[in-house]
Length: 402
Ligand code: SF4
Image 1 (tube, rainbow, N blue to C red):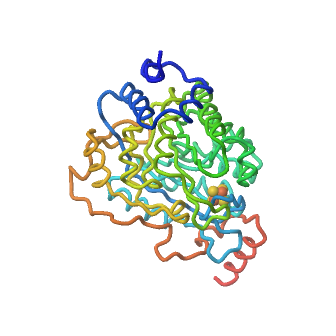
Image 2: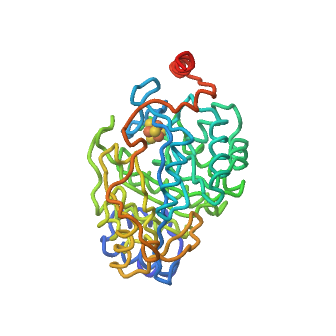
Image 3: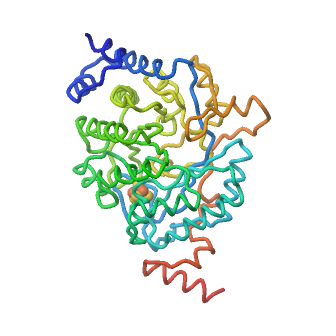
């Protein structure tokens, strides 16, 4: 059987065959093979998307990953932590645009204890009962586990009890410890720790996504190692809803370097579609690749345009500033010959585009964490224990002056 026939028949790719294809198959052939898998899994011609908001509740982080342009060290005047009311306002704006979920992620801030997350989740659910919290990537869960000295499953149970609905797959980068050490992200979570959080989340009944950021210091073999480790865990738990890959964005980072090309992105996406035969959904990462490559992704295995994404702070800090509102997302899906449908985090279809049902204001640029770019933590953090010396001083000073 030739390569294309093997994929079309649904046979499982071996590591050696995947590497051979990734290295040597013509790009058009990879597209044909990945598209055959997409058509087999999604024969209805539907391409989905979600309306949500990517809120980064804090940029203060002790992890200091070399590829990150978003974080600020503890004590920085540019460091911020949002308050409950700021987050509630963002939720109200998201609901007004037809959204029903926050993707809530942030830095590893030593001055935010687990109780703050629990209180935040409870308040959100009290005020917006139907709103979903897709929150806290595995390294953040590891960070909270270390801060609170609770095992990961106990942290997950407490967060679920407070209102956590699902976990985003961020912080995976490449799930190979050699790479993680070079990128200074081994300490925030090893490959096994990242996978361990996802295993615990799946066992607790949560669905999660999986990601891969490529294009830093890893080899092709290590990208494939990452994909095969995800495939193995999916065989074990079946808890991943989707996979998303994007290229490293180098601007303003300690690591520097250049960004992978569009063709490399499309080849990587297609290989992921072929290896991850037990994942139902692959997203197009238009936020890092732009709308045009995002649209092309639909011919390379993607069946989902990701999020309309009302706000974004992390990849923007590293130089990627693409924006598409729902009108644009739908236009790109339909111009590629697909039917556009809104979905939720579980990939259940919610309906037709909101822009077809009612007037929604056009959104021509993405919102930011704080409209005026201010640093500083919100007042409601004062009631929580700070662990860093700078955090304790700041909270004591705020109390003295109030
Ligand atoms: S990627 Fe996340 S964990 Fe790493 S430095 Fe940036 S904010 Fe911190």
